[in-house]
Amino acid sequence: MGDKKIKLAIAGVGNCASSLIQGIFYYRDKGLDSTQGVMFPEIGGYKPWDIEVVAAWDIDERKVGKDVSEAIFAPPNCTTVFYPDVPKFGTIVRKGKVLDGCASHMKDYPPEKSFVLSSEKEDELEDVVAVLKDSGADVLINYVPVGSEQAARFYAEACLKAGVAFINAMPTFIVSEEWGKRFEEAGIPAVGDDIKSQVGATIVHRVLTKLMIDRGVPVKRSYQVNFGGNTDFLNMLARERLSTKKVSKTEAVTSLLPYDIGADNIHIGPSDWIPWLKDNKIAYIRLEGELFGGVPMYIELKLSVEDSPNSAGSAMDAIRCAKLAKDRGIAGPLLSISAYTMKHPPKQYPDDVARQMVLEFIEGKRER
Image (cartoon, rainbow, N blue to C red):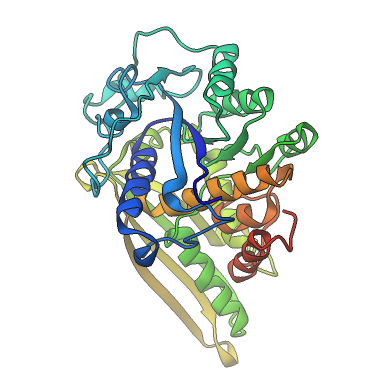
């Protein structure tokens, strides 16, 4: 299987896509002996560099019409360039369906920081389906902006019609809710929802929460406040786009608590956009609890990460698991890799349990 490729389609050629694509070539050059930063060096015979991009959509005029290898470095992308010499794919970025994919407030900010809508003709649903089929795409990863509920479902629908595995990396509840059944009935694997970074705010918050529970310390209050300088944080200044994001991040933590601490005692969510941070994300996390005898204690932590490479490692594993499921004829939401790499999976599991489930899935001991 080592010479087989995973044909990937991408909806949204932003920072996350840039990091993912750079990583394919970075690890191709490094080889399997040097895969620091990769959680699973090999999945069902597929290595990180076995992914090739065969189709892509975006709505920004600086990306539409360009080869993917150029588009990933076009503004407003601002993530770290760790592999500048990405070769040409021969895959041209097409104009996606805008729908709700561009928040109205974005036009009030400088173009180098924001989206500039392309005037090219949009691809309709039948166009996207045709491209997916003609390109032979195995998997599509959805990277449209937070709050793009209609756009996310547009690409999910295209995957259902084209028979392409679907990975939902953003917090619109598709795989974890009623659409999961549709993918199962269509015989197509799906992973979602809302990507959980390798070592990001969510996973760190979850690990600390579980530590306190396991050590008999009741959690009384907790917060997680995030800010950064990329277009994701700029987009999320429109608070009405944040409803599912806040639910996704909050449930990722509260699902580990065996009791309800009350909505007023937990706050998790993005707070602001600071342009000069670019793709760097800062998270402040606090958990308050009670030790033996009811004596109070707290943990406070500051996390600083480059946001998009942090998510790309999880995406690389989700893509390979989706292809492996497709090879095996497995359909519907993939519970193991969704629990391990997503904030709002169909079913939550503690992260150590989810990792073991993924290993069993890869070995063929677990169906989903």
